[in-house]
Image 1: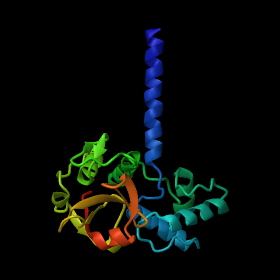
Image 2 (image 1 turned 120 degrees about the vertical axis):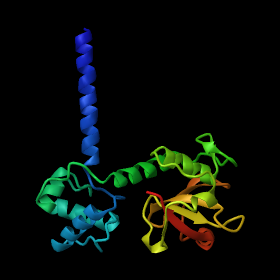
Image 3 (image 1 turned 30 degrees about the vertical axis):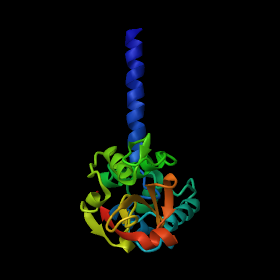
Length: 222
C-alpha cells in the first residue's frame, strides 16, 4: 500500500512538473523580448500584420497569430505553443524561456489577485494596502524586494520613458505632495493597478485626466 502511495505521489509530481514546463514554453499576450520580436517579424514576413516588431506581444500580435493559426488549421487561440511555433518559425520552441518574461507575468497575475482589497494607510498585507505597501508586497512574491515608501521606490531600477512602458514597470505620480507620492504597477494598454485611498486596489488609466496630470515617471526594476 505504501509503495502504491509513493507511486501516486511521484506520478503527481511528474505531471505537475510537466504542466509547469509546458506552461513556460508558450508565448502569449503580455510577453516581451527579442523572441517575441522575432515572432512578430516572421508573422509580418508571411503577410500577417503583427505591427512593428517591437518585442511586445499585444493585441495586434494576438490577432496576427490567430489568423496564422486559422490558415494552418491549428487551434486559433492567439497563444504560440509548440505546434504553432514550429509551423511559424520552422524549428522547435526553445526549451526554456526568458526568466524575466515569466517573472513579469507572475507579478501581473499576483497584482490582479488583490483587486478590491481596501486601502489602509501604512498597510502592507492583503488585509489592507497603501500604494507602496501594495507594490512592495506584490514584487516580494516574485523575489524582488523594494523599499517601503513610494519616493524611495522612485530611486531604484532605471528610468523608463512613457513611450517605452512595459508591463511590470512601476509608474509614479505626484498627488498629495510634491515628488513621488503614489505608485502603481503598469499592466499594459495605458493601464496600471494600484492601491488608491478612494477605492482600494483597482485598475486605472494613465490617460485619465487625473492620473495623466499627476504622472511623473516610471522605473523598471526587473
